[in-house]
Structure formats: structure tokens, C-alpha cells
Length: 293
Image 1 (cartoon, helix red, strand yellow):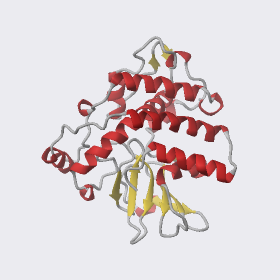
Image 2 (image 1 turned 135 degrees about the vertical axis):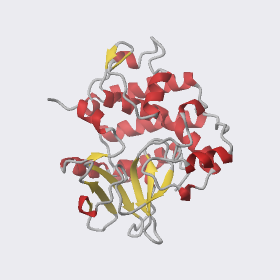
Image 3 (image 1 turned 30 degrees about the horizontal axis):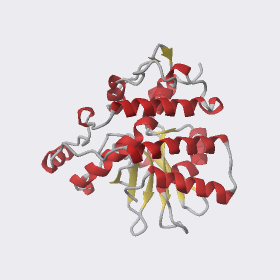
């Protein structure tokens, strides 16, 4: 399932919406967002890796992600422009995400998304509560940075995954960018579980009986729920109170397009959160800060 582009995901989503005669604010939002990401991804020059295969393998052996902030080969002006466009899309759906400060998607002032913010986000450190003089929740800022950087990280992943044997990686975080998984699948032949990074779409193998967020292996604190056809599974952990969506390819009757399944399984997110769990790829402390007292 590797090397799926944002353009392919966009085409699949638009095709699905036509065939199913579906229309909603949430669907329109994702289509608008994917159009930006597909446009940006197509204009990005594939970065030349600065890492040698030996250095990349050593980082993997030390359980470190391949991509560090200083390794980013990006056009920062393009990132800033992408951030403005993404913020404008979010602002168009206040019913879904709340108000977005207008200053975030105005052309001026420039330099709203600083390199310091990008470094903090990439390294999963705390984000500021203000940006360009406007108050913003860390959760919203996290989402804006995530969606703005995604096409750039996908491009880096396409290069860096060629340098290493990903079969050696068994950690809960992505071996390319250090992100967490938001969806996974059980492969068709033997049912091995694979995770997909929420940030860069990298895939890697992971244990079945282990939490993909906190590495908990206590079976008493791990469980799963599935639909009637056992195609979709929701793995939950009662230690860190997170969930992971997984598609069981062994029972799927049609071809599965995993990046699209992120969007087609949003009802699973609702069910998981109604049961008291949070998605593992979102930093829980940021989610808590956005909740009303």
C-alpha cells in the first residue's frame, strides 16, 4: 500500500462521493484539504537524501527516526503559503473546528509558522498558545501544522524508506518522522498487523497484542471491537485510553485504499471517543487543554 499520493486519495474520495451520492460539510472539508495537499505534493521536488544508507541503518538500530528537523529539505516559503491555505480551509468550517484567527490565513503579516514551531511539532514538544499575536488552542495549531507539513513529509518518506529495511522496526512511532499511527491493517495472508503514520503515511510492521501508543502488552488492558463482517476493528487500550482503527484485509470483499479509509471510518472515531478513548496519534495533553471546564 506504499507510495500512495494525495492526488490518488483525492480522486478516490471524489469518486466515492459521486457513487454514494454523499455530501456533507465534513466531506467538503476533506476534499478541499486534499486538493491543497495534492497540489503542493505535485510541486515539491523530491528531496535528495542527505543520509547515507549506513547512517540511516544506524539511526534505526538506535531506535531513532530517520528524519530530524535539520534534515528537512524544504522550501520554507512554500510551507508558509501552504499553512495560509490550510488555515483558510479550516476557517471555512467553524461548525467543525471552531473559529480560526483571521490573521492565520491573511497574506500579511508573513512568517506565522516559524521554524521553531515546526521543530517543536516534529519533535512532539509543546506548542505555543499564541501565533502572530492571536490566541490559538494547541490542538488546532497541531492540526494546522500537521496538515500543512503532510505533503512535504510524504515526499521525504518516499526517499528515506528506500535506504533501510523497515522489517527491522517494531516501535510504536514511525521510523521516518517519529509520528504515531492513526490507522492500520491486518495483511491478507497471515494477518500480521501494519501501522500507517498519521504524518507521512509510512507503513511498518507492529505486534498484534501490543498497544500502538504506549506499548502496553497486558492483555487485560487491551481489547478490540469489530463490525458484523469483521472488516473494521477498533483496538483500544485501557492503560493510556487510546484507540487505533484497523482494517482486516482478510475479510475485505473489495480493494482497500488505506488513506481513504481514514475518512470513510470517521464513525469509528466517534464510537471510540464515545467509549472514552482518544486517537493515539494526538497528544492527549493538547486534547485536554481544548476541553471546556
